[in-house]
Image (tube, rainbow, N blue to C red; front, top):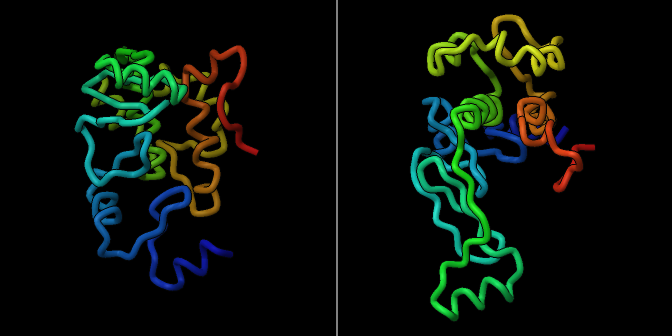
Length: 177
């Protein structure tokens, strides 16, 4: 009901819990196919480095993610001693980049065009993601389109494509109810 009322008042459903007026930069970026999703939310442009400040914050530099020390005391101690407060980092593989692209298309644009993925990554989407697509059978024809009612569950849809989540022995972060 809240979604219908916000849309009735002229707001555009940008994603998950984000609404904006039609002339807002988020809506314009989404319409232009440039909307991105990162650790901070929905920026209006992608392909830029993300600096992180504070305990447990995650930064992105090119194809690398870096997480700062998780505990405030460790973060502050690193800063005070002049050390870089990074706790860990990961360089994305080609598989990570593919899955990030797919998840980004779903979470930002609520659709996924298989031919576009095939072209961008020189892979057959249906073959490469056969296991994942079998879990989303009811949504698939030549792509995936998420309607308004499904947007509240977009995280759950994206979880199907998340290789790290699907290979984890235990879930270490929030679950979808």
